[in-house]
Image (cartoon, rainbow, N blue to C red; front, side):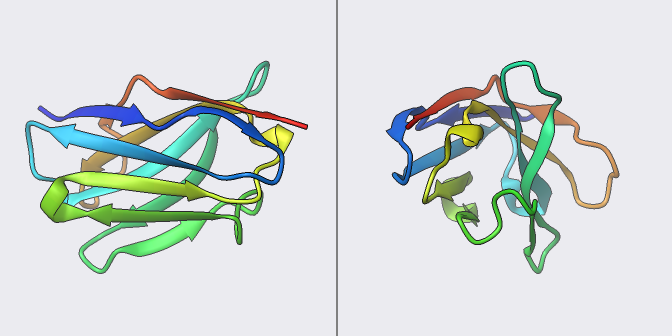
Length: 119
């Protein structure tokens, strides 16, 4: 069993930055695909970024490409999301997910952390 706990959310002014962390316990993340999703007020769940496989292949949604950076530190069993040049439309609950390499479905999900961007 993997437990994921997000932290680092909060308030930010448009154009500012925030960093999110997703700490895992129960299993090492080394053999897990991981990703960030978000859900804004009144919106559907939206993919943000992922880091996949042993090579750490990275993908971003078009909405955040060039502004957000996903990374992971297997030694600390933690994944990160650095968010720069924040926009009000980035306001959402951000959740991290994880699954064993190549499983095809996101098996584990954290409780989420709120990010609010004001103009």
